[in-house]
Length: 275
Image 1 (cartoon, rainbow, N blue to C red):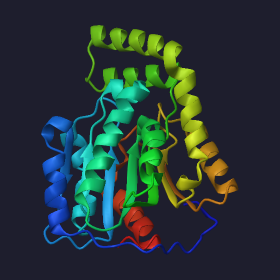
Image 2: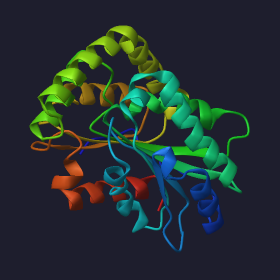
Image 3: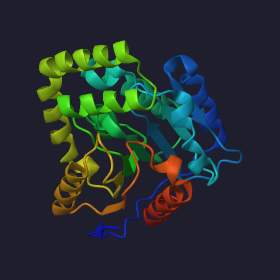
């Protein structure tokens, strides 16, 4: 487990109440491809935003909310479409909807932890814009990266499509169609999307504690890329925490090692005084 430059992070946050969650559930219904989980009683200092991998399902992403619900922490679980990961305009609209619903629902300032899977890091430019705007009630406390951050690129796209094919999620036609579409989209917007994510990863708003959960067996988020990002973040003074498995595929760490996965998240939340 890697940990560098501990700040003893202690920002002041306000507890989330049941009425806040009820209002948020009204703003973000199933048509938003989001699910709001609110444990009863709510006894949290903030809320966790879980953004899944591209083309994931809300039901799959919401399974991770149990980690937080068991600790009295409400979550917003969102399943991004391919278009929302590929195109900034679609992704920005998703982020605005979630974070403005949060701002409108909360009665007091609230701490936020991001739990991002795979390429969901491409939502960070719009997320940072929302949490740093004047009047925002949201205080970013930490970021958890599962199998990422994966930057836009043909290699990662082909690897993801191949993984879906191996796991039975894609037939032959869907596989080749996905590869062709990914190649075209990467040629159109790939460089811009990579530049935007690189810029935002160096933003002062993201100079908060970070946890990387990754694997040397991941065929999409390559171990060298993840560890290079960890070194870059540590070099700018970020409190970097991590755990690396040696036998888990992309976004499968919790599936194979639920107890370990939960333990590392627990330790991270305790470190940032979120629980």
